[in-house]
Length: 187
View 1 (cartoon, rainbow, N blue to C red):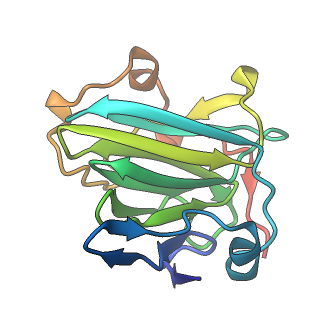
View 2: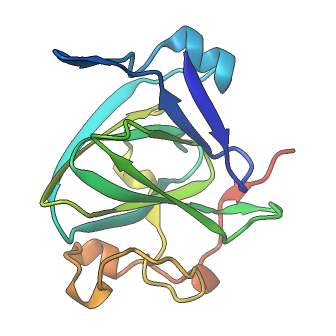
């Protein structure tokens, strides 16, 4: 079973697995469909992804446009990252607000990000291995994103952005004010 922490943004959940540790090391269930469905609701994950990045890499803020929008369950299995999700759901009382949480190999936390959010992370350790489950396959034609250094978002990435390692694609993403969200908040 896991501990589910609700956040100030509807739908974003921090999941803390129950870790069993002894002199040999530790064991925990990183995912149980039954427990996840009881805690979060029905989500059918269809693809697992993994990335490896070095200190100072910042990836994001990404999403897939409908009809290929993705819910994600993310975690860091080596090192540490600052994981960030931004609410892009039109009509949401928290539209444009973000939530940040440190995910690491030592805290074993996971973040559930429902459809309608942009997602990114900054690598805080020398190396980080990041894994995420998606409930929709990757569709390059549905790629989208917003600028991670948009001052209106007020995200403290915990690394100097002028020294951040970013992709050229990410540097070209629009500011939130110049972005027409394809997502709608459903109560």
